[in-house]
Length: 283
Length: 340
Image (cartoon, rainbow over all chains, first blue to last red):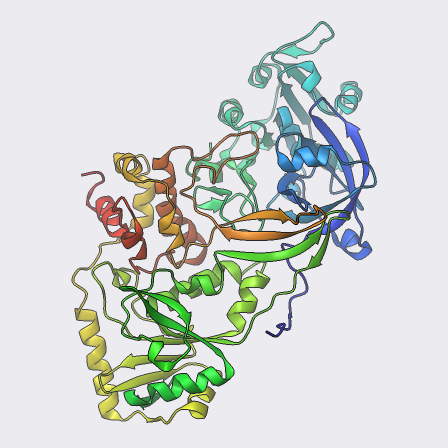
């Protein structure tokens, strides 16, 4: 047996070691991890778009696809908002600051930020769907002068499940973002809206000819939010959705994330609604 | 392309010669069926085989393989070198060579797969002509012919082989190990006659017109429910398929818990958990949806990217299916108007 000379420079299945540099408890089940790839040149070359994801790799446990929550305008680190929901995410939740994990990516097609520039934005998140959308929201924030009116609708089951509340509580007082929060089950402290996120569409005023939509949330939410956007008169190809599928390899090979005739990992996970309508079983 | 002629009784010379420098793998008898295995002596090679139980994909993308060894403490890769010995696969039918080229699109395209590539690069392919079995429908996709993707290809002309020489390496092998001569006019005429006879030996011509569009137009056809009722979700169709490439990845820890191996294994979209995500949501919970997806991906998903269907008509899945579901039946039902 002789080792074959390898012309390729990288094994796309081999994760880059990354250090956890900060952990913030967001809710009982969700933590925000800041990670920095240890290799200087790899870290510097790591460019991503909002909506893209990484494969989080914990040797001995496995891998899980996690969307990047931080904005591409912030370089040198990434933030992952992770719910403790499975083996890999459960193991990550036990990690401490300074521990080393593995990252592969960034993978997939994100939101078309350049195309969105110069327009109004209507961003709608449900539950953990705020995680990928927060990357886009913060990117817009860092390029705020390039966008028109920005409206953010965010719904969760109850107040304790509202993520990034520290940021959104501050933003409620800004006049360059219209931010509306809603929960299904309010408690005594809740002073914002009550009900499904679709209910908020009566409260907002948008220019459908000049607005891009971005939606991320549980699968059942998409159809209803898209209906509201269509009722407002928005074009199908200006409404962007992000799909959660089982993106195991991230590179279009293992087959697990098939959605219609596409793979969520390389063709998505972000699709516009026209594309999504043409994907069987997508919505 | 260059053409050479080799008398049939020279075949053992070629096999014996190749064995000096390569691991030679070819079809050998296993009970009443055939498998691709190492050829120890020239007599083991059965170029008269009909088809093999498993396709040659197992030699490039094994049912189970080590991707890397790792250390848990610092989450570091200890070893991800790929070792591949020089090999010759002797006796591939056109369908299986075509199937490898379809696999190449996935594994050697964007994000090249180093494991597949190492094995592919270290392997030479010698094709051989075949006779259609009852299950074969390669003629429906044009995969009964192969024009590239091999080093040499032997067409059986009775007492001699008409050899198509595709690669430099293939030409060198022939020069080194066996006596051949140039093809003359009568050889070319015999080759043409052989091709005509071969084309005529297919008993039926599967109608595949507008198949990708029909898959969308009949996405909700009761046909899929009926197939779902029969399918056992055993995944045998995927395992024996020369073009099914889906895989799973798992980590196996050593007893000490400190080191381990990341392993990939064949997977199937027919298995219940294939499309399940973390919170338990399963995007293809019903058997009907999984059976349908396999056809949908092969005849439209893959085609939308690579302009070919992901099937070569080898008929292995039809033989392997315990419920007797065959692509010929499914495609015919779609073309004829759904469930019947």
